Length: 306
Length: 150
Image 1 (cartoon, each protein chain N blue to C red):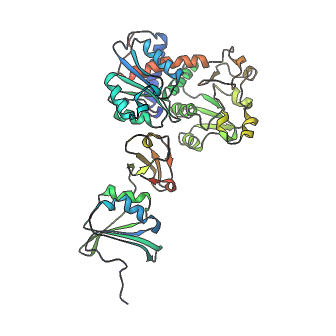
Image 2 (cartoon, rainbow over the protein chains, first blue to last red):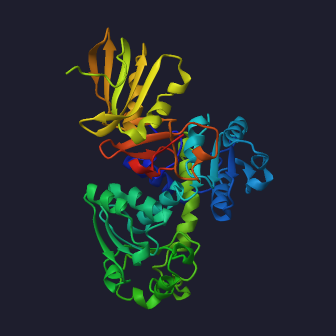
Protein backbone atom coordinates (compact mmCIF):
# COMPACT_ATOMS: atom_id res chain seq x y z
CA UNK A 1 0.00 0.00 0.00
CA UNK A 2 1.16 3.49 -0.77
CA UNK A 3 2.21 5.44 2.34
CA UNK A 4 -0.22 8.08 3.55
CA UNK A 5 2.40 10.49 4.83
CA UNK A 6 6.11 11.07 4.24
CA UNK A 7 7.92 11.32 7.56
CA UNK A 8 11.10 9.31 7.02
CA UNK A 9 12.84 8.24 3.79
CA UNK A 10 12.44 4.67 5.05
CA UNK A 11 8.66 5.06 4.70
CA UNK A 12 9.35 4.69 0.97
CA UNK A 13 10.48 1.41 -0.54
CA UNK A 14 12.35 1.11 -3.82
CA UNK A 15 9.16 1.21 -5.91
CA UNK A 16 7.94 4.32 -4.11
CA UNK A 17 11.26 6.08 -4.75
CA UNK A 18 11.26 5.15 -8.44
CA UNK A 19 7.65 6.30 -8.81
CA UNK A 20 8.44 9.68 -7.20
CA UNK A 21 11.56 10.22 -9.33
CA UNK A 22 9.73 9.43 -12.56
CA UNK A 23 6.99 11.81 -11.55
CA UNK A 24 9.56 14.51 -10.64
CA UNK A 25 11.04 14.19 -14.14
CA UNK A 26 7.59 14.84 -15.64
CA UNK A 27 7.13 17.89 -13.41
CA UNK A 28 10.53 19.19 -14.42
CA UNK A 29 9.51 18.98 -18.09
CA UNK A 30 6.28 20.80 -17.30
CA UNK A 31 6.30 22.45 -13.88
CA UNK A 32 3.28 24.70 -14.38
CA UNK A 33 -0.22 23.27 -14.44
CA UNK A 34 -3.50 23.41 -12.58
CA UNK A 35 -3.11 20.01 -10.98
CA UNK A 36 -3.58 21.36 -7.46
CA UNK A 37 -6.37 23.79 -8.33
CA UNK A 38 -8.89 23.80 -5.50
CA UNK A 39 -6.42 22.29 -3.04
CA UNK A 40 -5.15 24.03 0.08
CA UNK A 41 -1.74 23.05 1.48
CA UNK A 42 -0.51 24.22 4.86
CA UNK A 43 3.14 25.01 5.53
CA UNK A 44 3.66 24.97 9.29
CA UNK A 45 7.20 26.10 10.08
CA UNK A 46 7.57 25.96 13.86
CA UNK A 47 11.25 26.57 13.16
CA UNK A 48 12.23 28.98 10.39
CA UNK A 49 13.74 27.58 7.20
CA UNK A 50 13.31 30.02 4.39
CA UNK A 51 14.94 27.88 1.71
CA UNK A 52 12.81 24.80 2.34
CA UNK A 53 9.60 26.76 2.79
CA UNK A 54 10.05 28.74 -0.44
CA UNK A 55 10.77 25.55 -2.34
CA UNK A 56 7.58 23.90 -1.09
CA UNK A 57 5.49 27.02 -1.68
CA UNK A 58 6.87 27.41 -5.21
CA UNK A 59 6.05 23.77 -5.90
CA UNK A 60 2.45 24.34 -4.82
CA UNK A 61 1.98 27.75 -6.46
CA UNK A 62 3.19 26.46 -9.83
CA UNK A 63 0.44 23.83 -9.70
CA UNK A 64 -2.14 26.46 -8.73
CA UNK A 65 -2.68 25.17 -5.24
CA UNK A 66 -3.21 27.63 -2.40
CA UNK A 67 -0.89 27.90 0.59
CA UNK A 68 -1.74 28.78 4.18
CA UNK A 69 0.58 28.65 7.14
CA UNK A 70 3.24 30.38 9.14
CA UNK A 71 7.00 30.73 8.86
CA UNK A 72 7.79 31.22 12.53
CA UNK A 73 6.05 29.67 15.52
CA UNK A 74 6.48 32.96 17.40
CA UNK A 75 3.33 34.25 15.73
CA UNK A 76 1.14 31.25 16.58
CA UNK A 77 -0.77 29.76 19.48
CA UNK A 78 2.08 27.39 20.26
CA UNK A 79 3.65 30.32 22.14
CA UNK A 80 0.47 30.36 24.24
CA UNK A 81 1.11 26.75 25.14
CA UNK A 82 -1.11 25.06 22.54
CA UNK A 83 -0.10 21.45 22.01
CA UNK A 84 1.15 20.24 18.65
CA UNK A 85 -1.84 17.92 18.53
CA UNK A 86 -4.31 20.80 18.79
CA UNK A 87 -2.48 22.81 16.12
CA UNK A 88 -2.47 19.84 13.74
CA UNK A 89 -6.13 19.01 14.39
CA UNK A 90 -7.12 22.61 13.78
CA UNK A 91 -5.08 23.05 10.59
CA UNK A 92 -6.27 19.70 9.20
CA UNK A 93 -9.79 21.19 9.26
CA UNK A 94 -8.60 23.78 6.76
CA UNK A 95 -6.00 22.10 4.57
CA UNK A 96 -5.81 19.01 2.35
CA UNK A 97 -2.18 18.38 3.27
CA UNK A 98 0.23 19.62 5.92
CA UNK A 99 3.94 20.32 5.39
CA UNK A 100 5.68 20.84 8.69
CA UNK A 101 9.09 21.67 10.08
CA UNK A 102 9.52 21.44 13.82
CA UNK A 103 12.48 21.73 16.20
CA UNK A 104 11.37 18.64 18.16
CA UNK A 105 12.45 15.22 16.95
CA UNK A 106 9.60 12.80 16.23
CA UNK A 107 7.08 15.62 15.88
CA UNK A 108 6.21 14.76 12.28
CA UNK A 109 5.75 11.06 13.10
CA UNK A 110 3.36 11.99 15.89
CA UNK A 111 1.51 14.45 13.64
CA UNK A 112 1.11 11.75 10.98
CA UNK A 113 -0.51 9.47 13.56
CA UNK A 114 -3.13 11.98 14.64
CA UNK A 115 -3.75 13.94 11.44
CA UNK A 116 -6.62 13.00 9.13
CA UNK A 117 -4.72 14.58 6.20
CA UNK A 118 -1.26 13.60 4.86
CA UNK A 119 1.83 15.04 6.58
CA UNK A 120 5.10 15.85 4.84
CA UNK A 121 8.06 16.14 7.18
CA UNK A 122 10.15 19.16 6.15
CA UNK A 123 12.64 18.47 8.96
CA UNK A 124 12.14 17.39 12.59
CA UNK A 125 15.10 18.62 14.62
CA UNK A 126 18.18 16.69 13.63
CA UNK A 127 16.17 13.59 12.79
CA UNK A 128 14.73 13.38 9.25
CA UNK A 129 14.24 15.55 6.15
CA UNK A 130 13.06 13.11 3.49
CA UNK A 131 12.29 15.52 0.64
CA UNK A 132 15.96 16.60 0.73
CA UNK A 133 16.86 12.97 0.09
CA UNK A 134 14.36 12.68 -2.75
CA UNK A 135 15.71 15.78 -4.46
CA UNK A 136 19.24 14.41 -4.02
CA UNK A 137 18.18 11.09 -5.55
CA UNK A 138 16.34 12.83 -8.36
CA UNK A 139 19.44 14.92 -9.14
CA UNK A 140 21.65 11.84 -9.16
CA UNK A 141 19.18 10.02 -11.41
CA UNK A 142 18.91 13.01 -13.73
CA UNK A 143 22.65 13.55 -14.09
CA UNK A 144 23.67 9.89 -14.36
CA UNK A 145 20.64 8.47 -16.18
CA UNK A 146 20.40 5.78 -13.52
CA UNK A 147 20.67 5.21 -9.77
CA UNK A 148 22.18 1.75 -10.14
CA UNK A 149 25.82 0.85 -9.39
CA UNK A 150 27.14 4.37 -8.85
CA UNK A 151 30.21 5.37 -6.85
CA UNK A 152 29.30 8.13 -4.45
CA UNK A 153 31.92 10.07 -2.51
CA UNK A 154 30.56 11.88 0.51
CA UNK A 155 32.78 14.54 2.09
CA UNK A 156 32.66 16.52 5.33
CA UNK A 157 30.50 15.99 8.38
CA UNK A 158 29.46 12.36 8.13
CA UNK A 159 28.76 12.06 11.84
CA UNK A 160 25.95 14.57 12.31
CA UNK A 161 24.93 15.28 8.71
CA UNK A 162 21.25 14.42 8.47
CA UNK A 163 21.24 14.72 4.66
CA UNK A 164 24.16 12.29 4.45
CA UNK A 165 22.53 9.61 6.61
CA UNK A 166 19.25 9.76 4.71
CA UNK A 167 21.05 9.69 1.37
CA UNK A 168 22.90 6.52 2.38
CA UNK A 169 19.58 4.90 3.29
CA UNK A 170 17.68 6.20 0.26
CA UNK A 171 20.20 5.06 -2.34
CA UNK A 172 20.91 1.75 -0.59
CA UNK A 173 18.28 0.03 -2.79
CA UNK A 174 20.42 0.67 -5.89
CA UNK A 175 23.76 -1.06 -5.22
CA UNK A 176 26.00 1.95 -4.65
CA UNK A 177 29.68 2.04 -3.65
CA UNK A 178 30.58 4.71 -1.11
CA UNK A 179 33.76 6.64 -0.36
CA UNK A 180 33.39 8.28 3.05
CA UNK A 181 35.78 11.24 3.46
CA UNK A 182 35.78 12.86 6.90
CA UNK A 183 38.02 14.01 9.76
CA UNK A 184 38.42 11.58 12.67
CA UNK A 185 36.00 13.51 14.85
CA UNK A 186 33.23 13.47 12.27
CA UNK A 187 33.61 10.04 10.73
CA UNK A 188 30.64 7.95 9.68
CA UNK A 189 28.83 6.38 12.69
CA UNK A 190 29.14 2.61 13.09
CA UNK A 191 25.42 2.13 12.65
CA UNK A 192 25.69 3.19 8.99
CA UNK A 193 28.66 0.91 8.42
CA UNK A 194 26.66 -1.97 9.90
CA UNK A 195 23.75 -0.91 7.68
CA UNK A 196 25.99 -0.99 4.57
CA UNK A 197 27.40 -4.38 5.58
CA UNK A 198 23.91 -5.80 6.04
CA UNK A 199 22.99 -4.71 2.50
CA UNK A 200 26.33 -5.84 1.05
CA UNK A 201 27.21 -2.29 0.06
CA UNK A 202 30.91 -1.65 -0.46
CA UNK A 203 32.49 1.38 1.16
CA UNK A 204 35.92 2.83 1.89
CA UNK A 205 36.85 5.38 4.50
CA UNK A 206 39.32 8.23 3.91
CA UNK A 207 40.65 10.65 6.51
CA UNK A 208 42.32 12.79 3.81
CA UNK A 209 40.47 14.25 0.85
CA UNK A 210 42.51 11.93 -1.38
CA UNK A 211 42.55 12.40 -5.19
CA UNK A 212 41.48 8.77 -5.50
CA UNK A 213 38.20 9.51 -3.75
CA UNK A 214 37.41 12.13 -6.42
CA UNK A 215 38.75 10.29 -9.45
CA UNK A 216 36.68 7.15 -8.89
CA UNK A 217 33.43 9.00 -8.16
CA UNK A 218 30.28 9.48 -10.23
CA UNK A 219 28.85 11.79 -7.58
CA UNK A 220 30.83 14.01 -5.22
CA UNK A 221 28.51 14.99 -2.38
CA UNK A 222 30.03 17.84 -0.34
CA UNK A 223 28.80 18.93 3.11
CA UNK A 224 29.74 21.59 5.60
CA UNK A 225 32.25 20.92 8.38
CA UNK A 226 30.83 23.05 11.17
CA UNK A 227 32.99 24.50 13.91
CA UNK A 228 30.35 23.88 16.61
CA UNK A 229 30.53 20.13 15.99
CA UNK A 230 34.07 19.90 17.37
CA UNK A 231 34.82 19.26 21.03
CA UNK A 232 38.47 20.14 20.36
CA UNK A 233 38.85 23.46 18.56
CA UNK A 234 42.52 22.71 17.82
CA UNK A 235 41.26 19.77 15.84
CA UNK A 236 38.87 22.03 13.92
CA UNK A 237 41.65 24.46 13.06
CA UNK A 238 43.73 21.56 11.76
CA UNK A 239 41.04 20.13 9.48
CA UNK A 240 38.92 23.13 8.48
CA UNK A 241 40.71 23.62 5.18
CA UNK A 242 41.35 19.95 4.49
CA UNK A 243 37.93 19.25 3.03
CA UNK A 244 37.65 22.16 0.62
CA UNK A 245 37.07 21.40 -3.03
CA UNK A 246 38.66 23.61 -5.69
CA UNK A 247 38.45 23.49 -9.45
CA UNK A 248 41.91 22.03 -9.95
CA UNK A 249 41.01 18.99 -7.89
CA UNK A 250 38.42 18.05 -10.51
CA UNK A 251 41.01 17.84 -13.34
CA UNK A 252 41.27 14.06 -13.37
CA UNK A 253 37.66 13.34 -12.44
CA UNK A 254 35.32 11.27 -14.60
CA UNK A 255 33.44 13.14 -17.31
CA UNK A 256 30.08 12.16 -15.84
CA UNK A 257 31.03 13.36 -12.33
CA UNK A 258 28.68 15.92 -10.78
CA UNK A 259 29.33 17.87 -7.59
CA UNK A 260 26.35 18.14 -5.25
CA UNK A 261 25.83 19.98 -1.95
CA UNK A 262 22.66 20.29 0.16
CA UNK A 263 23.43 24.03 0.68
CA UNK A 264 23.98 26.46 2.27
CA UNK A 265 27.62 26.32 1.29
CA UNK A 266 30.17 28.24 3.30
CA UNK A 267 33.76 27.58 2.28
CA UNK A 268 33.84 23.91 1.45
CA UNK A 269 33.48 24.49 -2.30
CA UNK A 270 35.63 27.24 -3.80
CA UNK A 271 33.72 29.70 -5.94
CA UNK A 272 36.02 28.76 -8.85
CA UNK A 273 34.16 25.44 -9.05
CA UNK A 274 30.85 27.19 -9.79
CA UNK A 275 31.60 27.66 -13.48
CA UNK A 276 32.75 24.10 -14.01
CA UNK A 277 30.00 22.17 -15.84
CA UNK A 278 30.47 19.44 -13.24
CA UNK A 279 29.14 21.76 -10.52
CA UNK A 280 25.49 20.93 -10.10
CA UNK A 281 24.46 22.19 -6.63
CA UNK A 282 22.31 25.08 -7.79
CA UNK A 283 20.41 22.89 -10.23
CA UNK A 284 20.12 20.39 -7.38
CA UNK A 285 18.39 23.01 -5.21
CA UNK A 286 16.05 23.80 -8.10
CA UNK A 287 15.18 20.13 -8.41
CA UNK A 288 13.72 20.42 -4.92
CA UNK A 289 10.67 22.04 -6.50
CA UNK A 290 9.98 19.08 -8.80
CA UNK A 291 10.67 16.42 -6.20
CA UNK A 292 8.29 18.20 -3.83
CA UNK A 293 5.62 18.56 -6.53
CA UNK A 294 5.91 14.81 -7.06
CA UNK A 295 5.57 14.00 -3.34
CA UNK A 296 2.65 16.37 -2.76
CA UNK A 297 0.69 15.05 -5.74
CA UNK A 298 1.51 11.45 -4.85
CA UNK A 299 0.17 11.86 -1.30
CA UNK A 300 -2.95 13.60 -2.62
CA UNK A 301 -3.45 10.87 -5.24
CA UNK A 302 -3.27 13.43 -8.05
CA UNK A 303 -2.06 11.73 -11.21
CA UNK A 304 -0.02 13.71 -13.67
CA UNK A 305 -1.26 12.97 -17.17
CA UNK A 306 -0.32 15.89 -19.40
CA UNK B 1 15.58 -29.63 59.99
CA UNK B 2 12.35 -27.79 59.37
CA UNK B 3 12.40 -25.62 56.27
CA UNK B 4 11.39 -22.13 57.27
CA UNK B 5 9.77 -19.80 54.80
CA UNK B 6 11.25 -16.31 54.75
CA UNK B 7 7.96 -14.82 53.57
CA UNK B 8 4.53 -16.23 54.46
CA UNK B 9 3.10 -18.76 52.04
CA UNK B 10 0.49 -17.70 49.54
CA UNK B 11 -2.78 -19.55 49.15
CA UNK B 12 -3.71 -18.15 45.75
CA UNK B 13 -2.03 -15.53 43.62
CA UNK B 14 1.26 -14.59 42.00
CA UNK B 15 4.72 -14.91 43.51
CA UNK B 16 7.60 -13.05 41.88
CA UNK B 17 10.88 -14.49 43.12
CA UNK B 18 14.57 -13.86 42.53
CA UNK B 19 14.22 -10.13 42.04
CA UNK B 20 17.60 -8.34 42.23
CA UNK B 21 17.37 -6.35 45.48
CA UNK B 22 18.14 -3.01 43.84
CA UNK B 23 15.32 -3.53 41.34
CA UNK B 24 12.61 -4.55 43.82
CA UNK B 25 10.89 -1.21 44.15
CA UNK B 26 11.11 -0.59 40.43
CA UNK B 27 9.19 -3.84 39.93
CA UNK B 28 6.60 -2.59 42.42
CA UNK B 29 6.17 0.58 40.44
CA UNK B 30 6.23 -1.14 37.02
CA UNK B 31 3.34 -3.35 38.09
CA UNK B 32 1.60 -0.38 39.68
CA UNK B 33 1.22 -2.35 42.90
CA UNK B 34 0.66 0.83 44.89
CA UNK B 35 -2.67 1.17 43.13
CA UNK B 36 -4.19 -2.22 43.88
CA UNK B 37 -5.79 -3.26 47.16
CA UNK B 38 -4.91 -6.94 47.09
CA UNK B 39 -2.90 -8.28 50.00
CA UNK B 40 0.77 -7.86 49.08
CA UNK B 41 3.82 -9.19 50.90
CA UNK B 42 7.15 -7.72 49.95
CA UNK B 43 10.44 -9.08 51.17
CA UNK B 44 13.87 -7.72 50.37
CA UNK B 45 17.46 -8.62 51.18
CA UNK B 46 16.38 -12.21 51.74
CA UNK B 47 18.94 -14.98 51.62
CA UNK B 48 19.28 -16.64 48.25
CA UNK B 49 21.48 -19.56 47.35
CA UNK B 50 21.43 -18.50 43.72
CA UNK B 51 21.88 -14.74 44.13
CA UNK B 52 23.22 -14.11 47.64
CA UNK B 53 20.48 -11.57 48.33
CA UNK B 54 17.14 -11.26 46.62
CA UNK B 55 13.73 -9.68 46.71
CA UNK B 56 10.35 -11.37 46.55
CA UNK B 57 6.81 -10.10 46.02
CA UNK B 58 3.66 -12.10 46.69
CA UNK B 59 0.32 -10.77 45.60
CA UNK B 60 -2.77 -12.57 46.81
CA UNK B 61 -5.58 -13.40 44.39
CA UNK B 62 -4.01 -11.43 41.57
CA UNK B 63 -3.07 -12.85 38.19
CA UNK B 64 -1.43 -10.48 35.76
CA UNK B 65 -1.96 -10.16 32.05
CA UNK B 66 0.96 -11.21 29.86
CA UNK B 67 1.74 -7.64 28.76
CA UNK B 68 1.75 -6.41 32.37
CA UNK B 69 4.13 -9.08 33.49
CA UNK B 70 6.44 -8.73 30.53
CA UNK B 71 7.24 -5.18 31.59
CA UNK B 72 9.42 -6.67 34.32
CA UNK B 73 11.77 -7.99 31.64
CA UNK B 74 12.90 -4.40 31.07
CA UNK B 75 14.71 -4.22 34.40
CA UNK B 76 14.91 -7.74 35.77
CA UNK B 77 14.68 -10.37 33.04
CA UNK B 78 15.85 -13.17 35.36
CA UNK B 79 13.00 -13.17 37.88
CA UNK B 80 10.93 -16.29 38.35
CA UNK B 81 7.21 -15.99 38.31
CA UNK B 82 4.99 -18.56 39.92
CA UNK B 83 1.23 -18.86 39.77
CA UNK B 84 -0.03 -20.29 43.05
CA UNK B 85 -3.32 -22.08 43.55
CA UNK B 86 -4.17 -23.71 46.85
CA UNK B 87 -0.59 -23.31 48.14
CA UNK B 88 0.83 -25.15 45.13
CA UNK B 89 2.81 -23.77 42.22
CA UNK B 90 0.54 -24.60 39.28
CA UNK B 91 2.44 -22.68 36.64
CA UNK B 92 5.92 -21.23 36.19
CA UNK B 93 5.96 -18.37 33.71
CA UNK B 94 8.82 -17.20 31.56
CA UNK B 95 8.98 -13.49 31.09
CA UNK B 96 10.00 -12.12 27.72
CA UNK B 97 10.26 -8.60 26.42
CA UNK B 98 7.43 -7.63 24.08
CA UNK B 99 8.25 -6.23 20.60
CA UNK B 100 6.88 -2.87 21.58
CA UNK B 101 6.72 -0.98 24.86
CA UNK B 102 4.09 1.68 25.27
CA UNK B 103 4.07 4.37 27.95
CA UNK B 104 6.23 2.93 30.75
CA UNK B 105 9.66 4.11 29.55
CA UNK B 106 10.77 7.71 29.21
CA UNK B 107 12.72 8.84 26.14
CA UNK B 108 16.16 10.16 27.08
CA UNK B 109 16.20 12.76 24.32
CA UNK B 110 15.06 16.10 25.77
CA UNK B 111 14.24 17.23 22.22
CA UNK B 112 11.95 14.26 21.61
CA UNK B 113 8.31 15.16 21.01
CA UNK B 114 7.25 12.68 23.74
CA UNK B 115 8.97 14.86 26.37
CA UNK B 116 7.23 17.99 25.18
CA UNK B 117 3.68 16.93 24.40
CA UNK B 118 1.06 15.18 26.55
CA UNK B 119 1.29 11.82 24.78
CA UNK B 120 2.27 8.21 25.32
CA UNK B 121 5.83 7.09 24.68
CA UNK B 122 6.39 4.17 22.36
CA UNK B 123 9.54 2.09 21.88
CA UNK B 124 10.49 -0.74 19.56
CA UNK B 125 12.55 -3.46 21.21
CA UNK B 126 15.34 -3.88 18.66
CA UNK B 127 17.46 -6.32 20.69
CA UNK B 128 15.67 -8.53 23.20
CA UNK B 129 18.82 -10.15 24.54
CA UNK B 130 20.80 -6.98 25.23
CA UNK B 131 17.60 -4.99 25.92
CA UNK B 132 18.03 -2.17 23.42
CA UNK B 133 15.02 0.04 22.74
CA UNK B 134 14.44 2.56 19.96
CA UNK B 135 12.07 5.48 20.32
CA UNK B 136 9.29 5.22 17.73
CA UNK B 137 9.27 9.00 17.39
CA UNK B 138 12.78 10.48 17.58
CA UNK B 139 14.54 7.15 16.74
CA UNK B 140 16.97 7.43 19.68
CA UNK B 141 18.40 4.10 20.80
CA UNK B 142 18.42 3.38 24.52
CA UNK B 143 20.56 0.68 26.16
CA UNK B 144 19.43 -1.32 29.16
CA UNK B 145 21.43 0.69 31.71
CA UNK B 146 20.04 3.96 30.34
CA UNK B 147 16.38 2.99 30.67
CA UNK B 148 14.39 5.43 32.78
CA UNK B 149 10.84 4.62 33.78
CA UNK B 150 8.15 7.26 33.52
